Amino acid sequence: MSSHAFDEGGLQYCPFMPVFGAPQVMFERGSGTELWDSSGKRYLDFLCGIAVTSLGHSNPVVAKAIAEQATTLLHVSNFFANPVATRAAVQLVSMLEAATGEQGQVFFCNSGAEANEAALKLARKFGGRGRHGVISAYGSFHGRTLAALAATGQPAKHEPFQPMPDGFRHVPFNDLAALEAAIDPTIAAVLLEPVQGEGGVVPADPDYLRAVRALCDERGLLLMIDEVQTGFARTGEWFGFQHAGVVPDVVTLAKAMGNGFPVGAVWAKRSVAGVFQPGDHGSTYSGTAIATAAVSAVIDEMHRIDAPRLARERGAELSAALRALPHVTEVRGAGLLLAMELDGVDAKTVYLAALERGLVTNAVNATALRLAPPLTVSSAEIAEAVAILRSVLEEVAS
Ligand SMILES: *Cc1c(COP(=O)(O)O)cnc(C)c1O
Image (cartoon, rainbow, N blue to C red; front, side):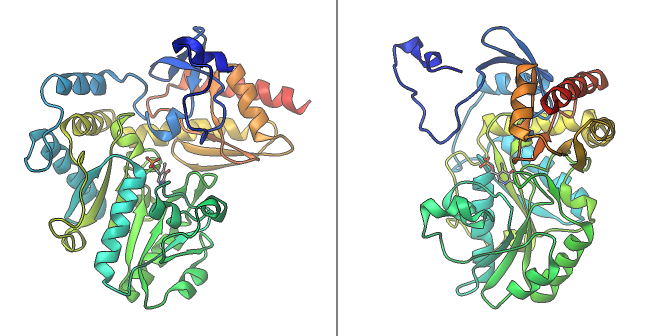
């Protein structure tokens, strides 16, 4: 996309801070799995704004809930209650209780990073002075705010912003011995993704997660699971930790929770949530009516369509089709959060060629393409996307 995209208001330079790469396409409109760019060209969206629009673009149920809330009540602050946030919170604690068997409490925020910030503060308050450390994994991604960045196990992302906040330690993912060796009396919690999304769609070994749970119990540490990318049915269960049958103490959520409306949440078991006292944490927008209207609509609609079943069924279909493609050496992930590992072809090249042919994906690293279509994707759309990928892979490799 050339710079003239910004010329409309007479501006001769890009008005955005240069933190993102140059965008390739200007999208104007979306419906279900489909997107249209400013020239009217149609695309299939197999990325969903990074696993966000799981119910498809312009989902009518979510759109109606947001529109009706916009003309009823947007926001009142946390000096007061509002029925919309209350309903969404009850729905959320019910879902987590069904998944964990634990009663819990939620705090609403506005993003995944904020959800993790709240979890990290909860861990510090839980641990007490001198026991504020958090262990997370290399390859992890927990957000861009300073503490969430410190928890993120990607040293290159820390470098320009050193010194990082104190108390963060990283260990190789899926390596129990390394985790055990990193525990000392300063550690309060372990923070892990059930599938490392930004790290290349790398699932946690279920045995590893179970062993980490046992270790946390033994050492009195919190097990905090970052479900920002995996939560809300994306992996074929409501939450990614359910694949391993572990019960976390703290769960962070965002992305698909608002289907594109910015919102996040942290959930904790009541005994853990109760370490927060009034004044310990907050946000102007926590539980704002407009965002929680979107959350309730997403939860209602995902239950109505049985979103985990759709993720499992369409995910099995998509992964089987991807495995049959040329130059694909591995398909990994769960449900509809998948990556295909490419042999001898550059993922960025494949991404660009697919985009040119009307398929939105993501080169999650140099050798793997990430796919996260809406959970409402049809079999016909999967076939269409796979045909595009086949043509691209045949051509790029020749
Ligand atoms: C996207 C993501 C985050 C950060 O969420 P933001 O809404 O971008 O702040 C945190 N954790 C995981 C696992 C993510 O995928």
